Image 1 (cartoon, rainbow, N blue to C red):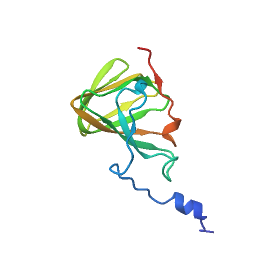
Image 2: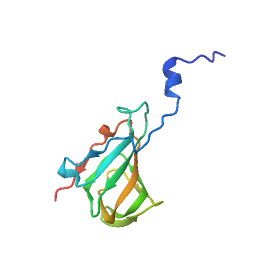
Image 3: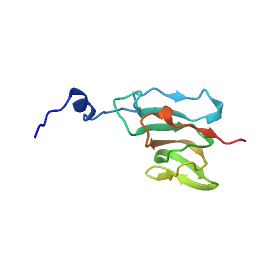
Length: 138
């Protein structure tokens, strides 16, 4: 049996390491999003990765990610601070070591507590830009 691999197959099989301290802080320019900022760690347009997008969302005290929907499901995993993720009208607390699964097309809104909030987010997409945010009408 032939065990040869192309250079592209070998590169695609290699691990990719990301450090959130070195990822640029994005967001903060579009008021439709609220006040959230984020650091994209894995996205095929930025890293040699595919099939998953991962990053860190950062909120100052009382910061928000406005109510929205998107087709892919999403997972949040709390890293620091506290806040509330309201999914289809039901509030859920998020804090360090708490994971939240957001179903596809569920309306969700995030508000940080007094000390701010940081959480990891994950989408089953190749690129962050593939996630179409549809913001709710205020």
